[in-house]
Image (tube, rainbow, N blue to C red; front, side):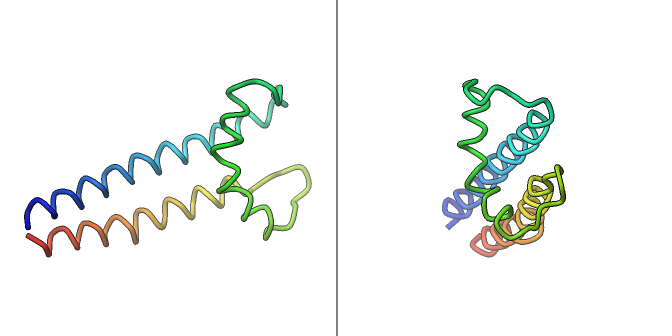
Length: 99
């Protein structure tokens, strides 16, 4: 059973890395939006494609606050909270119980 436990730990660590990269892309997109980027630039298009699925639901339910878009901030806070206080502890506890 220790092999399955180690596989769960590996999965948890990979999810943690993926979430950190995803949050970094959301923050990078927010910073880039302040300088009015070229929408046809490949980096801008890549960031839009990778972050739109996360940010779209937040934009749908949040009222606009003038020119300020707080959906990246809310998304990053929610993603980190779910990862740190629910997903990672749950997976680690499951892995430890299987040993």
